[in-house]
Amino acid sequence: MTDIAIRFEGAGKTYPDGTTAVEALDLEIPRGSLTVFVGPSGCGKTTSLRMINRMVEPTSGTVTVEGRDITSVPAHELRRSMGYVMQQSGLMPHRTVVDNIATVPRLNGVPKKQARERARELLTTVGLDAGLDSRYPSQLSGGQQQRVGVARALAADPPILLMDEPFSAVDPVVRQDLQRELLDLQRRLHRTVVFVTHDIDEAILLGNKVAVFATGGRLAQYATPEELLRAPADDFVADFVGRDRGFRSLTFDSAHDIPVRSVVVLRPDGSPGVVGPGDGPFPGGWTLRIDGDGAPRGWVRTGAEADPVVGGTLHRPGGSLRSALDAALSSPSGLAVVVDDGGRAIGVMEPGEIIAAIQDARLGGRTPR
Image 1 (cartoon, rainbow, N blue to C red):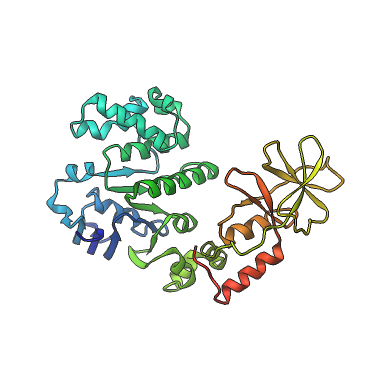
Image 2: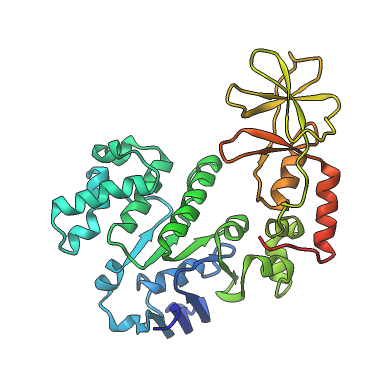
């Protein structure tokens, strides 16, 4: 069996009025990968996705799924063999959460009791409380609805999952949660995922490989996120990725060689302390406020603990240079706060040492992500 799950060979879509949505697309999507289609509005990325399940019929070339030409499979059968998640969750408002999720298994002949049991299991899989099973979509938040949409797409245990801008309609905080949930699901389930977005940051975060589409339905570049950032194929890709692609590329450089320093902390009861390996130096002028569990709650000026608490992003051991730099840049003290997997502060990284590590990476001393 080939390692290619989906193959486009000269696949195109031209409408009767002569408009070309997709231009002779040649693309191979590996089995078990998370591949992202990204580009500006009207570039053909969604059309390309929908050709996979025949929601859009190609007008030229071929699309094969697991070695079979999609035109040889009845459209309804093809669609039931894949998961599909759209921008708006598309849940049926008159059905409960559990029955929404059970929709495709029921269409495939699975008994109602068995389909509902599977649906309840999937609620936990996508990070939802099983107690939500009897609610209706209108009783859920936008993020919860999108999670139910993902659960519904997974209900028939499909090898392929198509996702059409599934997180673009939710607020940024919920979107980050959903992105992390998807990455965690993919690590556990190893599905072949094709994901459409217009957001290059989302594409770089999620994709094993990224296909950048240009206006007119042309595939401009198909590469790993790291290759895309460091070697854009042409001016269009360089402009689309953005002038700060050097900053984004730091995502692929490890910060594990940067030492973690000690930091002065202020506990909830007002007593001072020190967190870290003990080799200093301590930051001058700032104290890190922590809660009773040791989690950082912001910075205060030393000796002026009544000042407003301000914080920044947090860095975790094993994270990237981009994470470390962002934590330092967003911190009023200029120090990147480092936390363990439980969210407890374990020290800080100094900006000078972060910059030195970045310079080393740029000179060729990169370490694998």
